Image 1 (tube, rainbow, N blue to C red):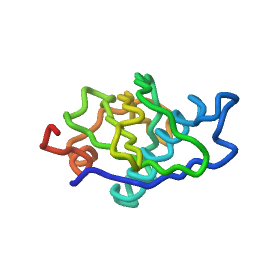
Image 2 (tube, one colour):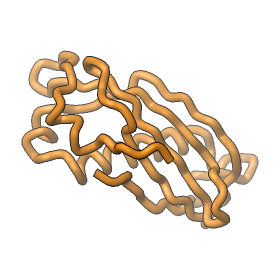
Image 3 (cartoon, rainbow, N blue to C red):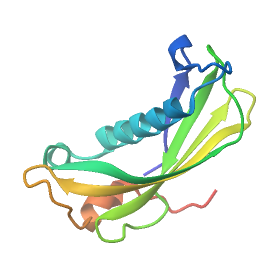
Image 4 (cartoon, rainbow, N blue to C red):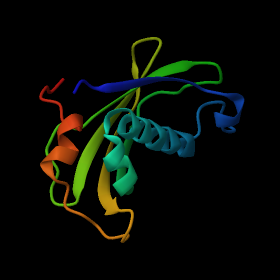
Length: 134
């Protein structure tokens, strides 16, 4: 599977008192893009049976984005899961070609019916794994 991308334009409601996208908005965008990736790639049976939860975010803020500016959000999963968890990488690049935010989030797989953690089986992970290292 190729990396997943989505274009996001900052709205006035995304902006903090410093005039740029608020840190909490970046976290929301990370979640939104990850969920969109899951919904775009996972089979319906998997979407119905499982849900993902974030257990950790590591975020590097490298630049600012103002209202009306657009970023390209790119996400990928470079390595196979470890038990119930895997790391999802995220990069937001501005129209100027500069990286604005980079993040690694750890996600855990939950069984919708029981609410319990599940080991991520290879067939669940396969559509999300990439074999490049750019």
